Amino acid sequence: MTLTKLQKKFAEGIALGMKQGQAARYAGYSEKSADTQAYNNMKNVEILAFADELIEAQKSILKRRFSGLASVAVDKTIDILQDVDASPQARLNAAKMILDYAGMEEPKQLNVTADVNQSNPFEGLTTDELRKLIDDG
Image (cartoon, rainbow, N blue to C red; front, side):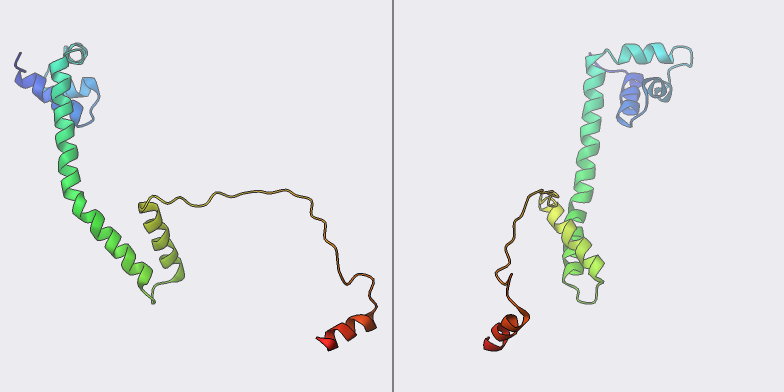
């Protein structure tokens, strides 16, 4: 079955992120029948497939448009990281962004509770004995 102009326009509205009723009105269905037509169109597998095709086409266009920008952004971030005149905070942020882009995660905080017994090897020595140890080196 071939889609009508209204059905194609409805699918376009759905692909643009409109709600069903809005997409029906956008397509040109009458105000009275828009919600019913939207309900019926959402059950039509061919309309949904066409909407999916439009969404995938939009994604493809965006990927092509921004693919070059990603490498430019990474290069600029590396420039900031290596710039000795950049503020320490800017360089730190650049390093974090590069690590994030590379898939590295920020270390998790670890809380450790432990009983520690310390022994002082100089315990019990007099002041004079301690001074003698210092003088003897």
